[in-house]
Each structure stands twice: as structure tokens, then as C-alpha cells.
Image (tube, rainbow, N blue to C red; front, side):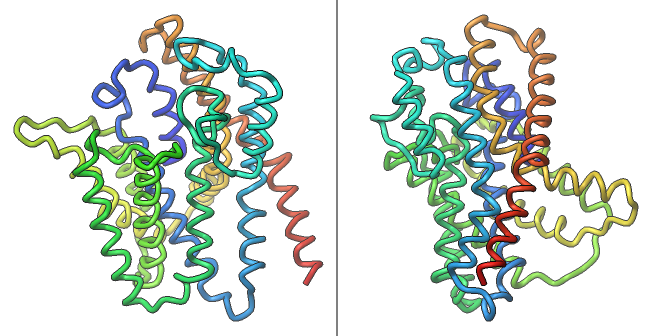
Length: 354
């Protein structure tokens, strides 16, 4: 549901001429913070008890097998659709970009290494200009490195203190950023790097702490309640209160530090008793990462269509819905004919090398 919310936010964004105040899905970018927290929880759940029989190298190979095949697909889709977004009003640098430079950025994108201003071939300042959301996967890799080499060894009190300090950093950033929000991290400049690391460190390691301290219970209708909370938070309008300009930042910090861990706890302890809901949850679970990492090249082209032709939302929403369905189809096809078979082969190869 968080991944679908991100796609909806990106598809509705071009209908608003003021990103900060008039977005139709205003806080959808907080899904990144939620993904980091969920990822930290999953990493702790999957790997905390394996280190007596698993090396650091094996851990990194496992993570590369899990994440990197779809990164290559997302970059490739971005390269294929790159010149379809050649609009000087939306992407001012595309028409000036030679093919050799596009290929170079694509090859670098395959590695997930970020690029600076000299290779910003789109004009939006993204560190991954062929597939913008890949910036969060770069930070995901950094979190995995920190976990494997150091933080997995920390005692619970040390980890708790670290997470507490990181939570203070989230509040500080949200209340002191120029835009009074947590929306940033996709560029290689000092401001965005502060956003990126602050948005990574607290939620990822809070998720790790949560999986270590939680008390198992059974929660009925967990998918419904956790999904409802997520969608309400993401769709909540930007908060503007007279005399209290920090309200929006405070809302976002509270959501990240308190509400997101609660949602993960609810979801992790949910009980699915019937076959059909279980199939739906399983499908949404496996499609979430492919959807997140492959949808944005389609969004680039959609942005150009809406902005260049000044399409109002009343006329554009059917096309936006069609794009959402296409994005789901691309994610599913990529998962079934490429990602899952390749990961199966790579996993077998890894086991054969032991």
C-alpha cells in the first residue's frame, strides 16, 4: 500500500503548480521513511539470528541478489524512455544530452553509484536521473553496510540510545528545514545529504530495535488498519496554522518517529485467517518493491504530457489511473519473467559456492 501510494503521489504531482501546498497526496514522500523502517525490521527479523552461520560477505551477496536485479531494470526503463520526456519546460537538459552521455549515465546507474551535476542529464538535480527513486536504494545499501559491520553487534541499550539520538535529529530537521518538511535526499549536495542520512538512520535502526524488543501478539484486521493509517497519513494535506509555522514539520516528525513504528508493529503481528486475503497480501507484498523501483520512468513521461498540455486533473485522472495500472503490470511482468527466475539462479549459484 505504501508503494502504491508513492505511485499515486507521483502521478498526481504534476496537476499541482505548487508542490509544497497544493498536492493532492501531499505526504506521500514519507513512504520512503516508512520503507526504511520496514526494511530495518525485516533485516533484523531475517538476519539477527544467522550470524553464527553466515559471513558478512554472504550477507552482502544475499542483499545484492534481493535488491540489485530490479535496480538494473529500473535504470534500463529510464534509459529507454529518456528522450520521450524531451520537454524544455519540464526537463531542460534532455534535448542537449548526446547518446553517449545517456549510455554512460545508464551504466553508472546499473551500479547504483550516484552522479553529480556534470552528469545531470535531466535537469532536476537527481543523483539517479534515469530513475529518481533509486536514491533511497543507495541509502538502503549504506544502512546494510552499517548493520553488517557494526550495528548488528550493539547491545540493546546502545542501539536504543542511538535510535533516540536519531529521533531527535528527525525532529530537528523537520522543524528547521527551509520547507518545514522531510522531503529531500535525492541530490548530491550538502542539504540533500543531510536529508538522506537523517531520513535513513532513525527509521532503519528503529525498525531493527523494534524487532528486537517487540512482544509477539495477535492482531485481527491488521492489514486493514495499518493500510488505513498509512493512506490517511500520506494523503493528509500540508498543515498550515496561523501563528505556528512549524506545524507541518511537527506532524511529519511525529508520523515518522511514533506512528510508523506502530503501523509496522500492527502489520508484523497481524493474523490472516482466510485464503483470499492471504493471497491478496502476498501479491501486494511481492509486487511492492518492483513497483517502487520501476514506476518512475513512466511518471517522467506523464509529467511532460500533463505540464506541456496543461491538463487539469478533471481530464487527466483517467490517464493517471491507466498509468498506475501500466506501472503495476510492468512491475508484475518484471517480477515474474526476470526478477524471481534470476534471483533463484543466483541463490542456487551462491549455495553451490559454499
